[in-house]
Length: 470
Image (cartoon, rainbow, N blue to C red):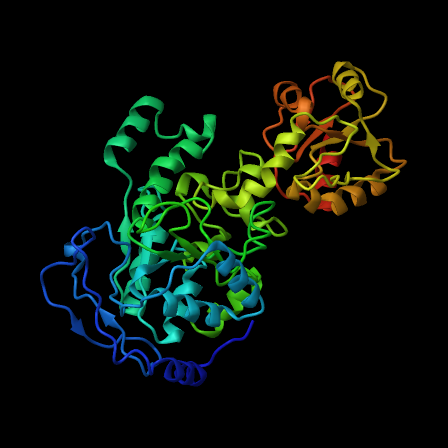
């Protein structure tokens, strides 16, 4: 990914600015959000680098913020012809090798005041920096769920001051939140899943925000979430939400950093001296609500810090649920899977089994049941409960095989039990499984297995666990 210096960003801005000066501010229709009655004034953004285009801002004070429009920066009117899904699929293919800056510029150019950047308070601040580098006016909105970390709120404030913008915050419906909390308590998501809480605090507020837009910009990346974001294009017709005009196909979704890896995002932020959420310095990578986010350990995938008590397949809150439609067949078919069989995906291809090694014993349902019943075993066992489609299981395959080879001939057995499909309920009820992978140690003197408590799954950590118990 190309990095831009202050001098190059000025030249970029200059080349993009010729069409801006002659355009007029868009008048708000009577049915949409109106800014406060105070006049709009032209002034330049106070930033570290000088762009040749002067963006136009609303002179709203913080106390004047009125919502449902998802932004505060006023951009020129851009009239575009109606385009079909096929048009955007072609555009996505044409932009597949484009830089995030080029994609961002295209998005802002096409939709003007009818597009907003969705900002979560994480490394997606890169989107705001790319938008600034285009020299075009841009709009930013964010979802305040009421459960964010204090550090995230401070970060929002820092970004507003750094870029001279007003982030438009969307809030959940107070009556809905009150009903959920009074009925189920403050932490019901630990017991029955995060979807209901996310639907009230995030999805519905987002839906309201997007109804005032024709397009939105997200920070999704292909390397970001196991099994759900691997195929996202740089631009698409939003498969889930509706836009200003209503109906299917009324909202366009831009993902400028879809093809950029996380490391390059952070190189870009450091090079441009962009402020970042201080939670990143504490080990947080993917940041959401405080009760549902925790730091990750070295070697863990960034999404393992989100909703860690649930399966890998559930690592979406609903804002981008359209991503998982192509993957649903994997999980639905797995409910009917055989422990010794392969799981089919939507294309009919077989998911290859994992943890394949002569040092690892593959246990059938009868085998694991017998192991559980034994009270006096000849040797201790370490067993991983897994699903071959689980990216977290795949990530630890090499370390688990390495461990098995080190333990070979030591008097300890290493096994695996495929616990998805028809065996998932048994694993949850009898084997303490909360999510994939779950690692159990069966000592020689007790039938009760001991669950590995850590998510640090390198060979040395697992070896220390075994040695401490055998």
